[in-house]
Image 1 (cartoon, one colour):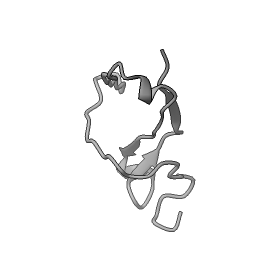
Image 2 (tube, one colour):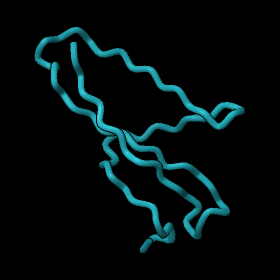
Image 3 (cartoon, one colour):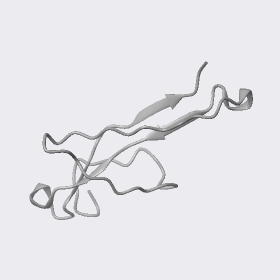
Length: 73
C-alpha cells in the first residue's frame, strides 16, 4: 500500500526475477527441470507473480498469492 498498490502483498524475496508473456487467454505455464540429486530432496522453493495492470492502482502492479514447491521423489 505504501508504494501505491493497496491490497497487494509481497510474500517472496526477489532473488530471481523473470519477465514472461501471458497467452491470449491470460494464462502462463512454466517448466523447470530438477536434477536427480539426492541432496536436493525436500528442498523448498517459493514463487509469486506480479502483473503489470496499469488501471489497477497507482503503482500499476497487482500480485498473486504465493506457492511453495517441495522437491520430492
